[in-house]
Image (cartoon, rainbow over all chains, first blue to last red; front, side, top):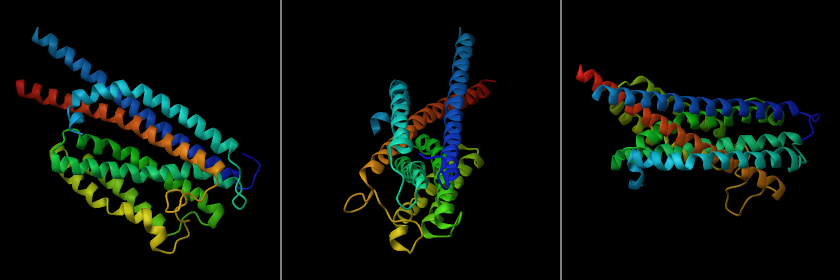
Length: 52
Length: 240
Protein backbone atom coordinates (compact mmCIF):
# COMPACT_ATOMS: atom_id res chain seq x y z
CA UNK A 1 0.00 0.00 0.00
CA UNK A 2 1.39 3.35 -1.06
CA UNK A 3 0.42 5.84 1.67
CA UNK A 4 1.40 8.81 -0.47
CA UNK A 5 -0.92 7.81 -3.33
CA UNK A 6 -3.93 9.86 -4.42
CA UNK A 7 -6.96 9.33 -2.18
CA UNK A 8 -4.94 7.24 0.34
CA UNK A 9 -6.86 9.12 3.07
CA UNK A 10 -10.11 7.48 1.94
CA UNK A 11 -8.52 4.02 2.22
CA UNK A 12 -7.12 4.75 5.69
CA UNK A 13 -10.47 6.17 6.82
CA UNK A 14 -12.29 3.03 5.59
CA UNK A 15 -10.00 0.66 7.49
CA UNK A 16 -10.00 2.88 10.60
CA UNK A 17 -13.81 3.08 10.62
CA UNK A 18 -14.12 -0.69 10.15
CA UNK A 19 -11.62 -1.31 12.95
CA UNK A 20 -13.33 1.06 15.40
CA UNK A 21 -16.84 -0.29 14.80
CA UNK A 22 -15.85 -3.98 14.76
CA UNK A 23 -13.69 -3.55 17.88
CA UNK A 24 -16.59 -1.78 19.60
CA UNK A 25 -18.97 -4.57 18.59
CA UNK A 26 -16.57 -7.26 19.85
CA UNK A 27 -15.97 -5.41 23.14
CA UNK A 28 -19.65 -4.74 23.84
CA UNK A 29 -20.62 -8.36 23.02
CA UNK A 30 -17.90 -9.84 25.25
CA UNK A 31 -18.61 -7.42 28.13
CA UNK A 32 -22.38 -8.15 28.05
CA UNK A 33 -21.72 -11.91 27.93
CA UNK A 34 -19.34 -11.77 30.90
CA UNK A 35 -21.62 -9.47 32.96
CA UNK A 36 -24.74 -11.60 32.45
CA UNK A 37 -23.00 -14.92 33.11
CA UNK A 38 -21.53 -13.55 36.36
CA UNK A 39 -24.95 -12.22 37.36
CA UNK A 40 -26.56 -15.61 36.66
CA UNK A 41 -23.86 -17.37 38.67
CA UNK A 42 -24.42 -14.96 41.58
CA UNK A 43 -28.19 -15.51 41.52
CA UNK A 44 -27.76 -19.31 41.35
CA UNK A 45 -25.41 -19.28 44.35
CA UNK A 46 -27.79 -17.00 46.25
CA UNK A 47 -30.73 -19.35 45.57
CA UNK A 48 -28.75 -22.43 46.63
CA UNK A 49 -27.78 -20.72 49.89
CA UNK A 50 -31.39 -19.72 50.54
CA UNK A 51 -32.56 -23.32 50.04
CA UNK A 52 -29.95 -24.89 52.35
CA UNK B 1 -31.62 -28.40 13.85
CA UNK B 2 -33.79 -29.92 16.62
CA UNK B 3 -30.55 -31.23 18.15
CA UNK B 4 -29.55 -27.64 18.98
CA UNK B 5 -33.03 -26.72 20.26
CA UNK B 6 -32.04 -27.57 23.82
CA UNK B 7 -30.35 -24.48 25.37
CA UNK B 8 -28.16 -26.60 27.68
CA UNK B 9 -26.89 -28.65 24.76
CA UNK B 10 -26.40 -25.49 22.70
CA UNK B 11 -24.36 -23.86 25.49
CA UNK B 12 -22.18 -26.95 25.82
CA UNK B 13 -21.42 -26.91 22.07
CA UNK B 14 -20.96 -23.09 21.97
CA UNK B 15 -18.58 -23.12 24.97
CA UNK B 16 -16.48 -25.84 23.35
CA UNK B 17 -16.45 -24.22 19.88
CA UNK B 18 -15.88 -20.55 20.77
CA UNK B 19 -12.10 -20.58 21.49
CA UNK B 20 -11.45 -22.34 18.16
CA UNK B 21 -13.80 -20.01 16.24
CA UNK B 22 -12.10 -16.91 17.74
CA UNK B 23 -8.64 -18.34 16.90
CA UNK B 24 -9.64 -19.05 13.28
CA UNK B 25 -11.10 -15.51 13.04
CA UNK B 26 -7.83 -13.92 14.17
CA UNK B 27 -5.73 -16.04 11.76
CA UNK B 28 -8.06 -15.28 8.83
CA UNK B 29 -7.97 -11.52 9.56
CA UNK B 30 -4.16 -11.59 9.74
CA UNK B 31 -3.87 -13.40 6.37
CA UNK B 32 -6.66 -11.36 4.77
CA UNK B 33 -5.26 -7.98 5.85
CA UNK B 34 -1.77 -8.97 4.72
CA UNK B 35 -3.18 -9.87 1.32
CA UNK B 36 -5.36 -6.76 1.13
CA UNK B 37 -2.72 -4.20 2.17
CA UNK B 38 0.58 -5.81 1.14
CA UNK B 39 0.38 -8.39 -1.64
CA UNK B 40 -2.69 -7.24 -3.64
CA UNK B 41 -1.75 -4.85 -6.43
CA UNK B 42 -3.25 -1.39 -6.89
CA UNK B 43 -5.89 -1.18 -9.63
CA UNK B 44 -4.82 0.22 -13.02
CA UNK B 45 -7.76 2.68 -12.98
CA UNK B 46 -8.68 3.15 -9.30
CA UNK B 47 -5.14 3.03 -7.92
CA UNK B 48 -4.87 2.39 -4.14
CA UNK B 49 -8.55 3.24 -3.63
CA UNK B 50 -9.43 -0.32 -4.72
CA UNK B 51 -8.17 -1.53 -1.31
CA UNK B 52 -11.44 -0.23 0.20
CA UNK B 53 -13.02 -3.26 -1.54
CA UNK B 54 -11.48 -5.63 1.06
CA UNK B 55 -13.48 -4.07 3.92
CA UNK B 56 -16.50 -2.82 1.94
CA UNK B 57 -17.48 -6.01 0.06
CA UNK B 58 -17.25 -8.47 3.01
CA UNK B 59 -19.30 -6.04 5.15
CA UNK B 60 -21.97 -5.90 2.41
CA UNK B 61 -21.97 -9.70 2.00
CA UNK B 62 -22.38 -10.12 5.76
CA UNK B 63 -25.17 -7.52 5.97
CA UNK B 64 -27.16 -9.65 3.48
CA UNK B 65 -26.13 -12.98 5.02
CA UNK B 66 -26.98 -11.97 8.60
CA UNK B 67 -30.44 -10.74 7.58
CA UNK B 68 -30.97 -14.09 5.80
CA UNK B 69 -30.00 -15.87 9.05
CA UNK B 70 -32.51 -13.69 10.92
CA UNK B 71 -35.30 -14.48 8.43
CA UNK B 72 -34.50 -18.21 8.53
CA UNK B 73 -34.45 -18.22 12.34
CA UNK B 74 -37.74 -16.29 12.41
CA UNK B 75 -39.32 -18.84 10.05
CA UNK B 76 -38.11 -21.68 12.30
CA UNK B 77 -39.54 -19.90 15.34
CA UNK B 78 -42.87 -19.34 13.61
CA UNK B 79 -43.28 -22.82 12.10
CA UNK B 80 -41.51 -25.18 14.51
CA UNK B 81 -41.53 -23.10 17.74
CA UNK B 82 -37.78 -23.76 17.97
CA UNK B 83 -36.84 -22.47 21.48
CA UNK B 84 -33.55 -20.88 20.41
CA UNK B 85 -34.69 -19.49 17.05
CA UNK B 86 -35.91 -16.16 18.45
CA UNK B 87 -32.70 -15.86 20.46
CA UNK B 88 -30.69 -16.46 17.26
CA UNK B 89 -32.66 -13.86 15.27
CA UNK B 90 -32.62 -11.24 18.04
CA UNK B 91 -28.88 -11.50 18.72
CA UNK B 92 -27.94 -11.50 15.02
CA UNK B 93 -29.62 -8.12 14.40
CA UNK B 94 -27.10 -5.74 16.07
CA UNK B 95 -24.21 -7.58 14.41
CA UNK B 96 -25.89 -7.34 11.00
CA UNK B 97 -26.68 -3.67 11.60
CA UNK B 98 -22.98 -2.90 12.21
CA UNK B 99 -21.99 -4.76 9.03
CA UNK B 100 -24.69 -2.90 7.09
CA UNK B 101 -23.56 0.48 8.46
CA UNK B 102 -19.93 -0.33 7.60
CA UNK B 103 -20.89 -1.32 4.08
CA UNK B 104 -22.73 2.01 3.61
CA UNK B 105 -19.99 4.10 5.23
CA UNK B 106 -17.03 2.48 3.44
CA UNK B 107 -19.05 2.53 0.21
CA UNK B 108 -19.49 6.25 0.67
CA UNK B 109 -15.75 6.65 1.27
CA UNK B 110 -15.12 4.70 -1.95
CA UNK B 111 -17.80 6.59 -3.88
CA UNK B 112 -16.42 10.08 -3.23
CA UNK B 113 -13.07 9.62 -5.04
CA UNK B 114 -14.50 7.31 -7.75
CA UNK B 115 -17.91 8.85 -8.55
CA UNK B 116 -17.33 12.34 -7.17
CA UNK B 117 -20.24 11.95 -4.73
CA UNK B 118 -20.58 10.65 -1.16
CA UNK B 119 -24.07 9.33 -1.90
CA UNK B 120 -26.45 8.83 -4.82
CA UNK B 121 -30.04 7.56 -4.63
CA UNK B 122 -29.18 4.66 -6.88
CA UNK B 123 -30.97 1.27 -6.70
CA UNK B 124 -28.14 -0.62 -4.93
CA UNK B 125 -27.40 2.15 -2.41
CA UNK B 126 -31.07 2.82 -1.72
CA UNK B 127 -31.90 -0.88 -1.19
CA UNK B 128 -28.92 -1.18 1.20
CA UNK B 129 -30.20 1.90 3.05
CA UNK B 130 -33.62 0.19 3.32
CA UNK B 131 -31.83 -2.87 4.76
CA UNK B 132 -30.25 -0.61 7.41
CA UNK B 133 -33.72 0.74 8.28
CA UNK B 134 -35.03 -2.84 8.54
CA UNK B 135 -32.25 -3.71 11.00
CA UNK B 136 -33.01 -0.59 13.06
CA UNK B 137 -36.76 -1.30 12.97
CA UNK B 138 -36.24 -4.92 14.03
CA UNK B 139 -34.06 -3.91 16.99
CA UNK B 140 -36.52 -1.14 17.93
CA UNK B 141 -39.32 -3.75 18.21
CA UNK B 142 -37.37 -5.81 20.75
CA UNK B 143 -36.48 -2.62 22.66
CA UNK B 144 -39.98 -1.13 22.62
CA UNK B 145 -42.19 -4.14 23.46
CA UNK B 146 -41.61 -5.21 27.05
CA UNK B 147 -43.35 -8.60 26.88
CA UNK B 148 -40.81 -10.94 25.13
CA UNK B 149 -43.47 -13.22 23.56
CA UNK B 150 -45.31 -10.27 21.97
CA UNK B 151 -42.02 -8.72 20.81
CA UNK B 152 -40.97 -12.05 19.28
CA UNK B 153 -44.24 -12.36 17.33
CA UNK B 154 -43.94 -8.86 15.80
CA UNK B 155 -40.18 -9.22 15.20
CA UNK B 156 -40.65 -12.54 13.33
CA UNK B 157 -43.15 -10.92 10.93
CA UNK B 158 -40.86 -7.91 10.32
CA UNK B 159 -37.85 -10.17 9.66
CA UNK B 160 -39.81 -12.33 7.20
CA UNK B 161 -41.47 -9.43 5.36
CA UNK B 162 -38.16 -7.55 5.20
CA UNK B 163 -36.48 -10.54 3.58
CA UNK B 164 -38.11 -9.42 0.30
CA UNK B 165 -35.43 -6.72 0.23
CA UNK B 166 -32.52 -9.21 0.08
CA UNK B 167 -32.96 -10.33 -3.57
CA UNK B 168 -33.72 -6.68 -4.42
CA UNK B 169 -30.31 -5.65 -3.04
CA UNK B 170 -28.54 -8.55 -4.80
CA UNK B 171 -30.13 -8.03 -8.23
CA UNK B 172 -30.60 -4.24 -8.10
CA UNK B 173 -27.50 -3.74 -10.25
CA UNK B 174 -28.93 -6.06 -12.93
CA UNK B 175 -32.54 -4.84 -12.83
CA UNK B 176 -31.86 -1.09 -12.90
CA UNK B 177 -29.24 1.24 -14.33
CA UNK B 178 -26.76 1.82 -11.54
CA UNK B 179 -23.56 3.69 -10.81
CA UNK B 180 -22.60 0.69 -8.68
CA UNK B 181 -20.67 -2.00 -10.52
CA UNK B 182 -22.43 -5.34 -11.24
CA UNK B 183 -21.57 -8.57 -9.36
CA UNK B 184 -17.94 -9.56 -9.96
CA UNK B 185 -17.44 -12.54 -7.61
CA UNK B 186 -20.68 -14.53 -7.20
CA UNK B 187 -21.92 -14.49 -10.79
CA UNK B 188 -22.68 -16.89 -13.63
CA UNK B 189 -19.45 -17.48 -15.55
CA UNK B 190 -17.20 -17.10 -12.50
CA UNK B 191 -15.41 -14.13 -10.92
CA UNK B 192 -14.11 -11.28 -13.08
CA UNK B 193 -11.48 -10.21 -10.52
CA UNK B 194 -7.83 -11.18 -11.06
CA UNK B 195 -6.43 -13.89 -8.77
CA UNK B 196 -4.02 -11.64 -6.74
CA UNK B 197 -7.00 -9.40 -5.85
CA UNK B 198 -9.54 -12.20 -5.48
CA UNK B 199 -7.90 -14.36 -2.82
CA UNK B 200 -7.50 -11.56 -0.22
CA UNK B 201 -11.14 -10.64 -0.84
CA UNK B 202 -12.29 -14.24 -0.29
CA UNK B 203 -10.12 -14.60 2.83
CA UNK B 204 -11.52 -11.33 4.22
CA UNK B 205 -15.02 -12.60 3.43
CA UNK B 206 -14.26 -15.77 5.38
CA UNK B 207 -12.77 -13.71 8.25
CA UNK B 208 -15.97 -11.62 8.48
CA UNK B 209 -18.04 -14.84 8.40
CA UNK B 210 -16.07 -16.37 11.28
CA UNK B 211 -16.24 -13.08 13.17
CA UNK B 212 -20.01 -13.19 12.82
CA UNK B 213 -20.07 -16.81 14.01
CA UNK B 214 -17.94 -15.97 17.07
CA UNK B 215 -19.99 -12.87 17.94
CA UNK B 216 -23.30 -14.62 17.33
CA UNK B 217 -22.48 -17.62 19.54
CA UNK B 218 -21.25 -15.26 22.29
CA UNK B 219 -24.33 -13.01 22.00
CA UNK B 220 -26.67 -16.03 22.05
CA UNK B 221 -24.96 -17.34 25.18
CA UNK B 222 -25.42 -13.92 26.82
CA UNK B 223 -29.08 -13.74 25.77
CA UNK B 224 -29.77 -17.21 27.23
CA UNK B 225 -28.22 -16.01 30.52
CA UNK B 226 -30.36 -12.83 30.38
CA UNK B 227 -33.53 -14.90 29.95
CA UNK B 228 -32.59 -17.22 32.83
CA UNK B 229 -31.97 -14.16 35.06
CA UNK B 230 -35.39 -12.79 34.11
CA UNK B 231 -37.03 -16.14 34.97
CA UNK B 232 -35.29 -16.24 38.36
CA UNK B 233 -36.33 -12.65 39.12
CA UNK B 234 -39.96 -13.38 38.16
CA UNK B 235 -39.91 -16.54 40.34
CA UNK B 236 -38.52 -14.51 43.28
CA UNK B 237 -41.30 -11.93 42.91
CA UNK B 238 -43.82 -14.80 42.86
CA UNK B 239 -42.33 -16.31 46.06
CA UNK B 240 -42.74 -13.05 48.02
